[in-house]
Length: 192
Image (cartoon, rainbow, N blue to C red; front, side, top):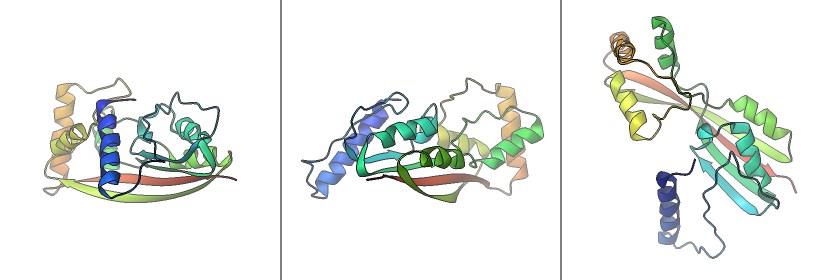
């Protein structure tokens, strides 16, 4: 998904490297759609996907497309929230009999298995990070603020259901909503 926000991220990366005095004569900044990207020749030494993989239609296929663009010895670095993120959100929906409307997040085990079948060596690390909010609505506002409130499932709650979820979640907390982000850090190095 190519957006103005991703254009801004590329500009910021370039500016940061320039300010650090890093020569850019051999550096290319490209914005690609991993879902449709195909290359006939491997030409990248480094590909970075930071918090984008969960937006791919098929995370395994998108990352595979990116690894195919690597030169021998080239590296793909990716980080993304994995499918073990936000369990409390899911549990609260389940307790109330409400549809859990979060976007599906990538399954790291599935990705690692599929990528390992190719000509890359995979290393990955998983880490749980926690964020606290005073109220459940603040968590959802945060998702909106960081651009993660767009639904890929075309499913949503009615206002009354959403209010029920918020009230229930708030009533079960001790003045703080604690949300778990299950973050995956993945490195794939193409074989020589």
